[in-house]
Image 1 (cartoon, rainbow, N blue to C red):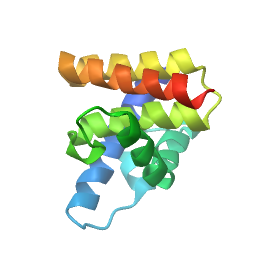
Image 2 (tube, one colour; image 1 turned 60 degrees about the vertical axis):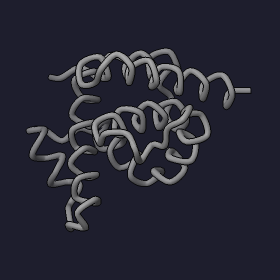
Image 3 (cartoon, rainbow, N blue to C red; image 1 turned 90 degrees about the vertical axis):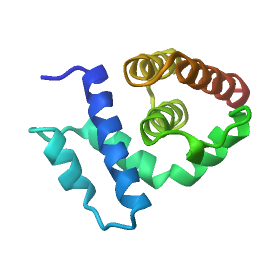
Image 4 (cartoon, rainbow, N blue to C red; image 1 turned 180 degrees about the vertical axis):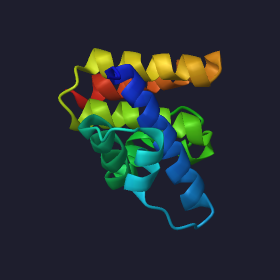
Length: 133
């Protein structure tokens, strides 16, 4: 059984693939993408992946509001996936805010460089503090 951190990583990989397909105007099937990454169906992964896809416009708008000198579409697809999951969890799930932010930072530390990790941390922190009020 995978823990939530491992499941977030799978969700990030699934979203990465979705962004690749979207970029190349290739048709894709989200359940198949998830199934290829995860042998057993998991509600948490499904919620993250489908939720981010469903709310991507709102997530992008929120990200762009708080990103400094950046646009979410300019980020690498991996970084976009990590930031999108973090925002989705902050805004649309019961996951404690500190957990959402820390999990995104940990994923970023594994898949991005230090500058991107700091940028994701700062963006999520700003969203947390601004949107909670």
